[in-house]
Image 1 (cartoon, protein in one colour):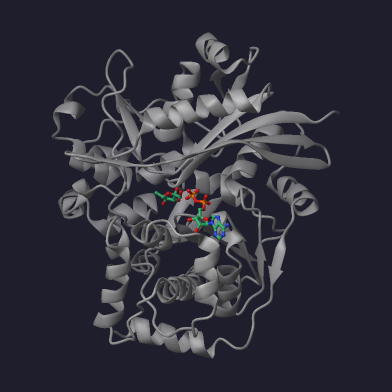
Image 2 (cartoon, protein in one colour; image 1 turned 90 degrees about the horizontal axis):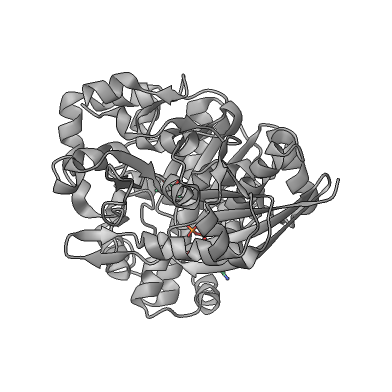
Length: 480
Ligand code: ADP
Ligand code: LRH
């Protein structure tokens, strides 16, 4: 059969893009139709997503994409828009880095202890899990008018089609899903007084999600009907679906604004030890579980680059490569780095407080960030293997960080394992492949991955030297 075209809308925390995937039985080509910045805005009430600008970017992207056989949407997790009884959006969605959830978790745990919450949902503690955001929002005037909650990709999908749903992979990041039943955790919702009627019915990757509205067709110049297909609408679910691995003995690191480092499993790990190590069990395609840890990721660098007046990355990375390795490291898993602002100072302060040399120049600070990320990758990959009793022999790196060769090499060195880097636009590829699968062009998850191995350029990094230096740095960091 001839190739088909699919539009993948992929919204990351730093940029949104509309990509076009052309898929045949043995071919897969991805091109960028449109990319636009995702710039959160601080207003007096807090940090907000500019969701109208994102929607405008999606429409412009669909226009640039041209005629496609289907559209799929994925974005960062946990955040949502509230709709009133008329289906109108109530205010700009709150950014997960907003401070409103400070001190909220303790209140939630008073009603449902953290250990029980983990046993029931498998989700790591993060202040921004939708559950805590809802606990913080509940007393607001806006919430009193809310009749529906749509997660970000579901909200944009609703604007495109007029149809509402709650896609399961992203729903699993709300902390209201039971990873064993892959359905709502009625018990958790009940105990915390959360009305599950706020959510539209669950849908799963591959389910139909409506067709583009006539007004959208008119605005984008497309000819209908153009179906929207539910994909793994959590960007990390789509990215992991596009990890070009064969077999099961692999770890992955999705590198972008975040580093999401862990394993693909067939069942959640819900032990107390796993909770203490703050590993999460998010839902993936076809009954898989993403067992991973959130690491601050290239956010640390993005924030420094912003503070330094946006110098070119290439130059910074060249300088960083010339700085001696592992002079000072920070804990890149530390939620203290979650909020925006003053990042170079905060990193310098963390080094000073732990009695390490204080990095001063942009090159030194960049090196400190990359060493720290590689070290955090090492820890997550090692601990995930131990906690899940699932050994690996290769680490796959996907996402924007694959363009950072130094980070990929340091990750191989730190893990003491070969790294395979690519694809860069993994989330968009996972999004495209689920749509193609719905049309019968590819088979199961293994078939999707085979097509990626056969068609996508990948770069290999062999580990250099032993891991002794990394072990020593790790010990320095954990015994503080
Ligand atoms: P997200 O989806 O979370 O917005 P991406 O996967 O798009 O993030 O990754 C963005 C990151 O990729 C940037 O913060 C940057 O560190 C890295 N990156 C992008 N382009 C380059 C480049 N040319 N060289 C090195 N790193 C790059
Ligand atoms: C990455 C991501 C990640 C979540 C975070 C909020 O874009 O979806 O998986 O933890 O954003």
